[in-house]
Length: 192
Ligand code: SF4
Ligand code: SF4
Image (tube, helix red, strand yellow):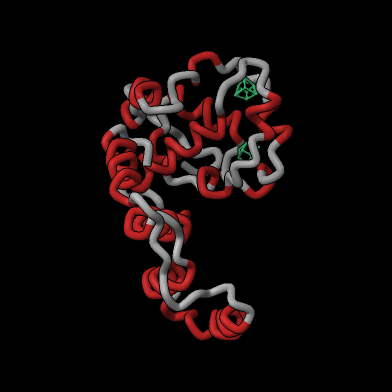
């Protein structure tokens, strides 16, 4: 929706709030009193399409695409300042995570495509080795999200490798099966 663009009632999704409400971390939105403390505290607000208070207002009004396609959820750096200052103790950061998962699921993460690629491959690494393997993660990320920019990463990659920060071989943790069971359960619950 553009500034001053007319919005018709029929285009709104009035089930969106209930859908968010049913997501892990989304159940508290109805308690928002629109005080704006979150937006006033957020260090990223000036770069966001909509600051956190407005995102909650848009969710309530049924602006599904406006919320899921915004850059807001991808610029959230999980600093938790908003959650600490919210007078209604709403876990705003958790809601941002829930919105990220929904945006990825619905293919609406265009503005956060690179973050989504990184996140997806990080989970893959943890599932595979029980911990991150930076070299494989960055290789996968560059191939999927930065292919035309790959050379840009070479000098930094070389420096990291020479300082032992990019191990060639991955290291698996012990009892990996137990961790995989936990990850599978979390995925079942829709938390990843
Ligand atoms: S600080 Fe809490 S109550 Fe205030 S607008 Fe943000 S989410 Fe709503
Ligand atoms: S957790 Fe996200 S939304 Fe909240 S203040 Fe930090 S950057 Fe802003």
